[in-house]
Length: 129
Image (cartoon, rainbow, N blue to C red):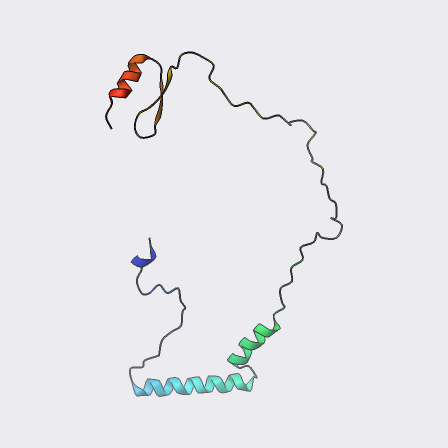
């Protein structure tokens, strides 16, 4: 299924929620009170959202890349585990040496077809596209 067929519920640009809407003013007031009490509790324990995000990013160790071999693996050549048998020369390309095929014809577009007789050559010549 392609992306243009998906509805608005599929968001690839983020999962941020929009503005919270309340049915009544009482619910909005209660929500604000709960948010304030939660913020006071977080401040009491010394954990604030902004500082926690910054601390997490700053405490992370920088990436280090080690492209050398691990200790004890400085060998330049690793011998094969085989017994030395099995090496072979490249096989020669097959080549037709007989006299049964008279030639190669082109049937439809670039379809190569072997021609065995003069009758077949005439039949292919008379075929339409």
